Image 1 (cartoon, rainbow, N blue to C red):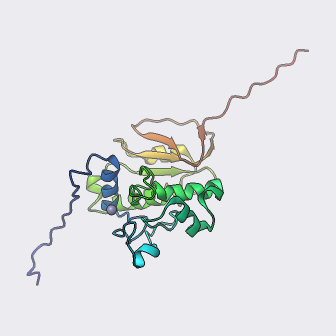
Image 2: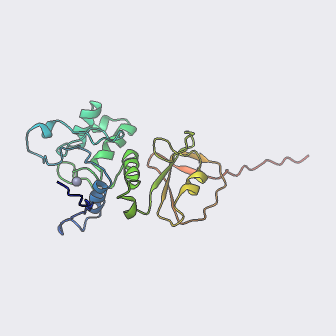
Image 3: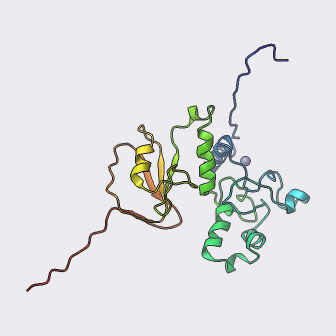
Length: 223
Ligand SMILES: [Zn+2]
């Protein structure tokens, strides 16, 4: 029975002293706080050498752009499961997809067999993180968010699925007090932009982005 008592919502992140010195551990736990699951889904506790369903059957992390993953898999095994060929035979884009989970902050690939340094979040994960910050309990602890810009995609939400098509729109939406990150998908953004607040503008790993109209040197021919 609740007896009309107010249910107070509190939660916390506990990180052991042993692992707190690794920057990715803090990000990993913050990732959970902002609703991210492990890249292997709920198969989190299965370590290399253990058997059972969790060892052979990847779970779902509910993120569209992460491929299937298990903590016990090498890069080759991730490649074979998802693309049916060895890692070294993959196309560049497929290799990126494998690296995206092999080096993912929300993976367990700091363990053997991959032993990767964990430094990646995918665009889908950043979106989910952003949506979580809009939650009433989370927005009080987060002062920044990620905005996506893609000039090929005429959308207007600033998310990875519905990105802005201009840098200026993203700048206008960014928090005036700073902390936001604007990610530019590859392309040339022919805009003259005014930045009037503290923010970060970066390209994605998918390729370079440039802002502004390139100079065109006119040829002057003498009569
Ligand atoms: Zn975890």
